[in-house]
Amino acid sequence: MADEEVYFCRLCKLYDDEDKEQYHCEGCGLCRVGGRVKYFHCNTCELCLPRDMENSHKCIEKMSKANCPVCLEDIHTSRIVSHVPPCGHLIHRPCFHDLIKAGFYACPTCGTSMIKMKELWKSLDEEIEETPMPTEYADLFCNVLCRDCHKESLTAFHVLGYKCLACGSYNTVRSKGGLFRKQVSRTDKNEDPRGPGSSSMGAEGFSDESE
Image (cartoon, rainbow, N blue to C red):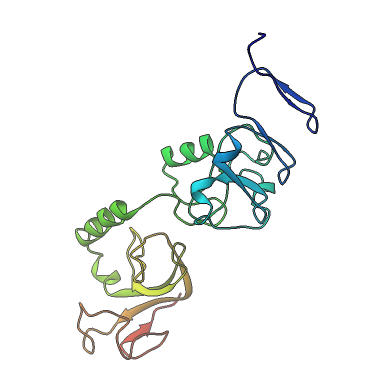
């Protein structure tokens, strides 16, 4: 034991005889592990983050003071490693992996996709193309809001999903208005419904099918 270094923090009254690269963060107000040179403190997020995220992370005010949206346990003082998805909302890493294993890819806080979904969206494109809607539901369109790019689209109605025409994501929700039927006699069936004269509710080329 004589050759081993003992970590001691007078502020936290913390002793530790195991080297974990401990350091005290003034901004967090407590001791962290992992090495001071490997982390930086973000004053907006009020949290220590890896150096490689210093110029790329999305700042959210007092982000660390929120609880994990899955287990509802405190994140700021937790010893459990946290994961930072692209949206910036913290979630415990084990909770994140549990969500993905269960098939939930959207952030529980804001609904943004937490992982790269390009391949899944591609497979949905193929599945929708191979699964045409029944005649009574063909050529129906609806307004959707994308939870990934936050843009609105007037897209084709399909029971398998609504595609965002801005970014290609299927992580969408129905927005304003009901369903609109395309007037085949006035608009080519394969033409983009957002074309001239058919870009809004009740526009030429569509009839209101709202419930």
